[in-house]
Length: 96
Image (cartoon, rainbow, N blue to C red; front, side):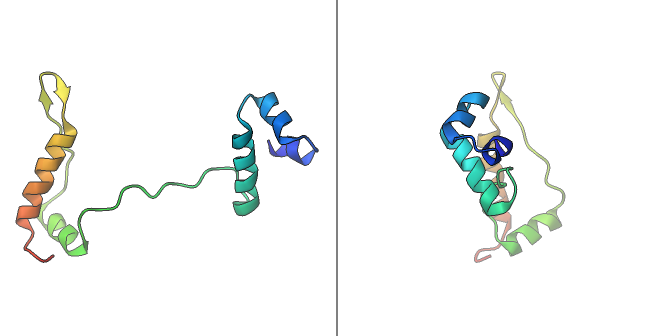
């Protein structure tokens, strides 16, 4: 994309040549102008549901391991995670 653009090709021509959308070409060139890189930024991910003091209490309990369970052959990690979080919240004193 950068090579073609620097050699005078139009966005639509670049998009047609590499078989992608014009918006993709535009976003890539815009990102390169802003950051100097064509790589997308990393997403921050979900916010933690625990504050610092709660996390310290969790670390005192021991290592956190992923919990998985199967019901009728299907994995219900979301359900298990919700129950695990509820149980952990019961261990942390109120107001923390």
